Every structure is written in structure tokens, then in C-alpha cells.
Length: 341
Image 1 (cartoon, rainbow, N blue to C red):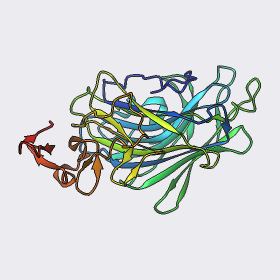
Image 2: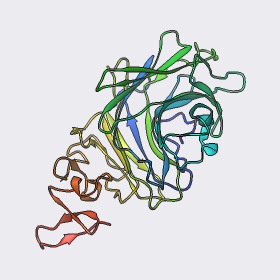
Image 3: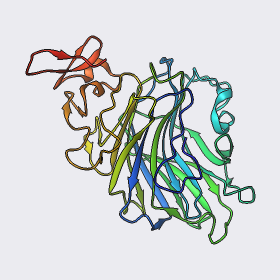
């Protein structure tokens, strides 16, 4: 996961446990010196790992943020499956989710912050929150929350007094609002609490429990934002980043299905036969948008190999065809199939 002491927009790339896929988005703001008392991000899972899929567990989809005093944190969604050993769950999650998980799959939402130092520790008010350790020390609030594929959820973190920050999640389909919890920040030199939020952000998509790069479960989600000042401010540019030792991930500018292309949308895919198409040097929000080049039939993608999102042949149409268990380009000139496996 990203480190708490990073003060720049460049996310510190820490390898996911087991060498699994990981991809990132770095955001640029028109003015990254301004501050905000709130941040929002829209999440939309399009391919959620299923309980029966045995490889690649604990998929995290989160946004990293920073306070004025330089301390960071993150908030987002997580998918855990029963195959994971709860004793290995990171950051104390086993206390909240239980060591005897009876469900086949657990979805969760979390928001967290690292401590400033041993004299300035993050506390909390109310349920669902606790201390964590492992990659820095701090506190987080975490709840089980069932996601539905292709439904947008808005995660929000906001404060009224600068010391109490409350995390919520809104189901955009039903309008239902759920409180995740409230973290309490001690005053630090020069600031009420940890200060306001810097208008900056970096997104990450990581597999925490894997056996390596290959044969990992497919996961895909779209992220819109980050928004600041009650959604009045959003990034003006974004670029992808990746783990260099695992190529089975891609970042593009179109959330598909959903037909959301360009700013402020970013789409993450990883695992399975996902093919990396968009390089780290590509500006995501410059037309033609990466992710809109190929027709998959009912939606679009940046390559036929990335059309299925673990849905098989039914998501492989248009410019593509399902051949030998993979979604492939049809070469109109030669009349042959170029199979990507």
C-alpha cells in the first residue's frame, strides 16, 4: 500500500504481498496549494472477485490523501474472500470482520489515517474504528458493505471542526447513506487537528493476498474524482502507473460498461488475461481517450483482450471474437485471427 510519509503527488509504489498485480493513477490539480474540508470519490465495480475463485484475494481499490501537516491516509473499498486466512488480515481488520467468517465473500469500505508521531495519535468517536499497524501506525474505520456490480457508490470524508472527520458511503442507485465512522485528530503544531486536506490525490488498485502475478482473479472498477469543496474542484489531468514486475494490469480513461469517458474518470483492470495497453507516459484525459478504441459489442475497451472483464464470450463482440478461450482481434486485412492469451 502507499506509504504515509509521501508528501508529493507521486504514489510510493509498494509491491503487493505475493507479487500480485497492482496499478495506480496519479492526479494533477490546477491548484494543488489549496485546501478543502471534504473529499469525495465515486466507486463503480464492474468485475467483483467471486467466492469460488481461488487465486488473488483481498483486492483493494482506494484513494490516498494528505493533510496540511503532511500526514496521509486513504479511503476506499475492499473485497475479501473466504479463502483468505483471517489471521493474516492486515491492519487489525480481523477484529472488525471476525475470525470466523461464515459468508463466502466479504466486501468492506474503509477510511484511515496514519499518526503524526507517538505524541499525536489518531483516535476515534463511536463504533467501527480501531488502531492498525504493519505499514505505519494509525487508526481506521471499517465496515462490511455489500457492493453490486455496475452500481456507483460515493465515498465521502468531511469535517466541520477540523478535528472530527467522518466517512460515509452513498449508494447512488438507492440514495441510501451509510456512516463508516469518525476519526478524531489531535491538534498538531500550526494546525487544528492535522489541518485541512490538500487538494491532491493518488489512487491505487492492489492485490494484497496473492501467490504471484499469474492466474490471479480478474477485478475491474472505475473511480471518478477525487472531488473537493463539495465536488466543485476536480483534477485536470491523470496518468497511470504500474508494478514493473507484473504486467497483468491496465489503466484507462473510460469506465466500461457505463460509457463514462474522460475527466474525472479512471478505469482499473487487473488479473486474469488483462493486457497492459496504456503506458505510464500517457495522459489519460487527452482525446482520443484510452479505453474507447475497440468495440466489445455492448461496451468499449482499449483492446479486445480487456473486453471480457471475467465475463467470457458474452462480453466479447463488436470488433472482437471469442477464440480459444480468449477475446481476440479480427484482422480485417488478412482475414485471420490474432489471438491474445
